[in-house]
Length: 212
Image 1 (spheres, rainbow, N blue to C red):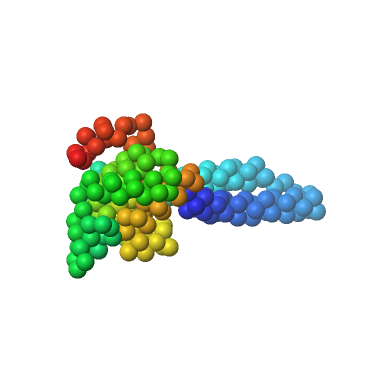
Image 2 (spheres, helix red, strand yellow):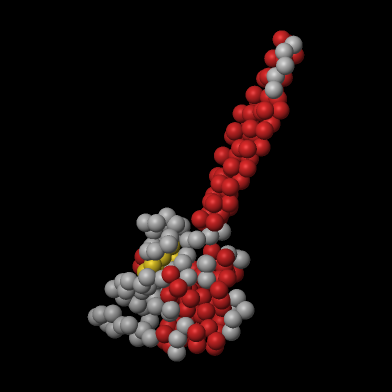
């Protein structure tokens, strides 16, 4: 959401700068007209101003759309399994343990309970949609920018969230707490999957995604 606002303000900066230049031009031409008593086509200048506003508004819409496409739903997910140790009760002392979807869901629910999070089923559905409950999932397709990647259980993008390291993104506890914080602050719209899971029961969503 912060990125959306930032891009929105940036886009409007592109609008305001030419508007300022044109307004200044109009003022100067009016003064010049008074001084020299000649006719200046102010109407043409207004037409140009309207065209610039329309074009800049299109730029604003594209920027907002691009900002909202930071996360790809699982229908577009191309998963690469990253060999990163997964922390938890099932982690081996000297190696990597592949956790099944059931144990991952249990971890999510446990963390949610400890943090008194109210929307646990939503959180689980989001993890299913984003990564199919795979903590090491990576997506590199349909991202903005194209060179960025979505990481981990909740597909945290490495460009839009530079403050989150790969190790943190692939860590179940960190990724879950990061996501809960965003949701608690009203930023669930950062995830494209938000619009796919609203109003769908967890049991039905597991069924259609073939999650046991």
